[in-house]
Image (cartoon, rainbow, N blue to C red; front, side, top):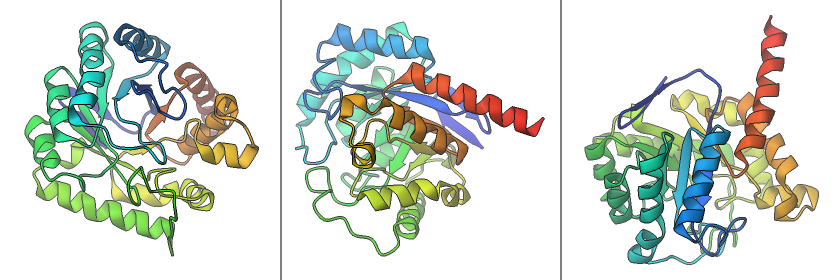
Length: 280
């Protein structure tokens, strides 16, 4: 299985790719406001690369539950200087976490090679043609509702079946828009319009999404489900995040989206060594 993102090419199977989260927002649930200044944000991205992140995912609009939309101009003012700074100084792939084609286009012009779209193209029909035209990688994620309202009353009769069907349908749509399958990654959307029981079921059944034939992205780092399970505040959720990352990796996830890059990579190396020893 090949992932193509502009001039980058990754061939799976291989150890999971770690995607470091770089939020340049004032209100993200874990690191909101910590990297509001451009130089702080760029330095943090460089630290994540040094720790082993192969992708730096830059986001300028919070998608935490209850978050309000921001304007395209505001989002651009947050992410574009950071992407420009990283592009000049690091070799890691740069991803822009956005639902807006205007933001995505300007980010690509500055060096981004992946668009991470929590809206799966439903928000704007212009985004998929941009992905097709540019050749960037694209993360297609499931979300029930919108960030402002997604956690008010999420309901599913069969969360695994419904999420899988959603991804299948959106995959058909994006391919018909001219995007090559090699550009696409799939994300079941942990925490995006799901209750705890939905998140747990999706994580328990990640293997069922392997039949879709595209790399899986899983992001559960520091999320509220860990707090619900353990009672830990967001700043104390690293152990739960590492456990979830290891589970996702063992379940076939190819790309892990995390806040804590070095710690995650250390945990993954131990799991990988044990897996090799078992097969030896």
